Image 1 (cartoon, rainbow, N blue to C red):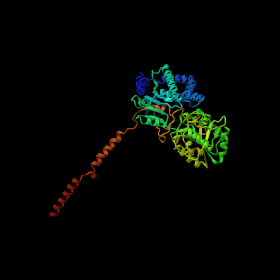
Image 2 (image 1 turned 180 degrees about the horizontal axis):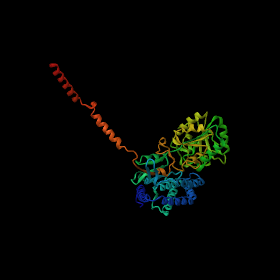
Image 3 (image 1 turned 45 degrees about the vertical axis):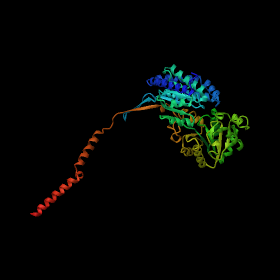
Length: 494
């Protein structure tokens, strides 16, 4: 085997995985609700049992985030998810309308391809495995190369748990030799019916270009607006809790804090009190240069890192116990690097005159890489909430930590690690993706209106119209005229 090219081996492995999983899925499609629920319960059980080991493996392999938060995410992606999706009807008749005599029947999509990011490598694999099986689909994962071991392990645990509970063998697969050639092969192979892409913009765009249905999610560049009526202490607490959750690796985490002039000093003091450090312009520049490569692409070595690690890497000194770094920005775009998405413990800080200016700034920030995703607002003014609900995003998160709120942990939103950005963000859905996005619905419809009489009546009307004077041809009219002329001439001659 050592004589074979790596890319060829990876492509062949991918083809094998797709064929095996498709075969397994055709069998799973015949399972009933009880069988599927039994399988999912065992997957949840195994995910719970391995939540700690998977979290440790992910941090060890990628260097991103925090073990305790990845444990939470693994459990959220299994136990919490299960409680939410358990009552969902994804098999057989899911709706029977007695009045209109229509019936909806759920059918699986088929084999799914799941693209897994390095920032949430185990929790996303667990989550996608469970929602796939709930809808009677198979799934094959394309892992991020830097998170290969932990994603492989998560996928293996989910497959083994599913098979142990009665699922067909190979229902969940994962590429062990990742390459662009393998990913492209999986995207375009006939066996795959739909792609669920969670990752960078380039990968999501490629998924939508594969020529088949795809659910892709773009980046978030979440503005957090602290309005003058907000509970400042609570708002700051939520923002820090969110931004330090797994060291900012969730795309729904806050990226910029926006405050009004009248409360600026209070907010800054509260951040300092709770562990925020406001960098000087020089320090902000040093950190920005360390955070980004090739323009505003994030330096992988700074993703999901603590404030202390970032400060050390940038060569600045911060107080012990600092949780987040804040850098003041005066605008949005290339000259203001912190106005871009930062999946780590760094925030941009903006001061505005009033809510009108805050609105304009939020739109600029969203257009700078987060359209369609999420916006956070802290306020006690309901009218203000509705004004910001007009912004070009599909999640308006009020008085909560944005990371936890966006994925449905601290809000009533659907528990999910795939957050759609709608057409505004180049996504096919604006929802938090659930098993309901992974089913086809066929419809049975009985006739409830007799249209035959109307059709017969309409036909008779047409016949009558064709025999009326208005339907006489020009030749017929001329013949009648000539006959009248001849008759008049005869009468004149007498």
